[in-house]
Image (cartoon, rainbow, N blue to C red; front, side, top):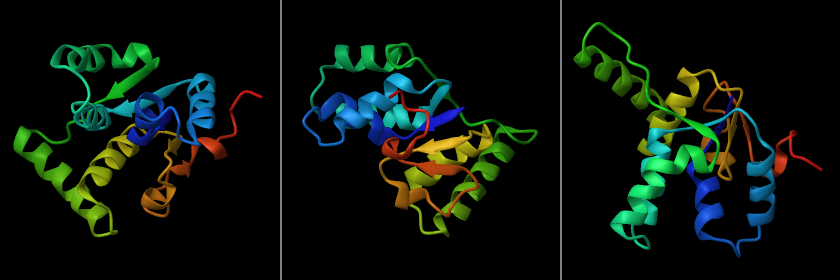
Length: 147
């Protein structure tokens, strides 16, 4: 499964004049077995909240997985209690923070790792490279793009 970072959706939805938009769109159209996390979706909604009405924002949130033909992943519970699950998540996030990652990137990367995604696709490769066992690529580097 290919994990997509928030910036791919931001460029697709909000920046059609960005130089990367065509490559980004080609990647989105060609990639199969795509996923993102609930944190990415919430981040996109937060960014979009400045230009969308509450109704449009709700529509984005509710229909996002269908619009992009992907799965929205939630953190997997680990432990015998909610407190143990949260402690485990916080520990994992803090380990990533110690690798010089910001909080939201650490949270997002942990979900991708929990689901053993094959690739982590982002325009911010340097934020994730050498901080995970996943292959980190930009949409421009992705091998499965249609010709």
